[in-house]
Length: 352
Ligand code: NCD
Ligand code: ZN
Image (tube, rainbow, N blue to C red):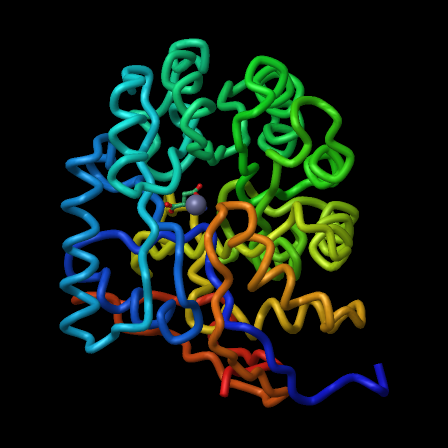
């Protein structure tokens, strides 16, 4: 590490998996993201979920008016629709025509605001057929939901019971295995043989590159380190870090930054989601530096996602410096507050 750089320049990154919510809180979280990223894939799990093109267009207008009032004209939201048992082939065609970039599959009950999710993927075959045909990516929350399956096994069981059959049935469908958390998922994507191998990719969050499941229980229960899919054992973190820093274009940045108010996290039944948007790039830089692979950050953060979505790469450059940044204990979130990832601690890298 002695030769480690103290400054790196890269093409401005995009966040390929982001929750910004709605209403008053949206403005606060948008500002954090837009400081670092040029574009972000906006997740559709609002209450009620964004299940139609009309709802997605209305959501996009609300985002744009918040960006306007923040004076930000350098950030583009990329809109997604929430797949349900009833999504029609026609809605998929309409989504494509209206510039929506993907559909998101939430198995019903898998995570925050997923009650309206898919009960059985077989119900979605007409929509998936249409997505494959028009080149509309499917983003998957890759966990089975059945309560008999141990929470630490839900992702690996999903691979065998849902993902592999899906890849066989729709070999040309573009699939992003979102926020992967296990060695099994990293290796499944790395070694993909089922379907057209150029149609499979995965996003990885900063928390899954930097922490293992001990972080949820360090000295007591740590609700701000609880997200879904849940942090796993150290061997899984190591496999994810290896995948992210491998230079393989199948792995790219998706923070899954998922804001929940402080009191909704610090509760008897606290919400799942880590708020990493405050200095996500600093967190990723730390992770890559920990294995001496800072030179692989630009591909992961700035190129591979755009290439997968067939969007142009950004052209503006940004600079990260090795300069310790203190992370506040709390940040404003509408009329309440939020506790960011690393609250009260420091991050080794900062955006200039
Ligand atoms: C996300 C949220 O809060 O919307 N929570 C999370 O723990 N990641 C939903 C999700 O992406 O699973
Ligand atoms: Zn998410």
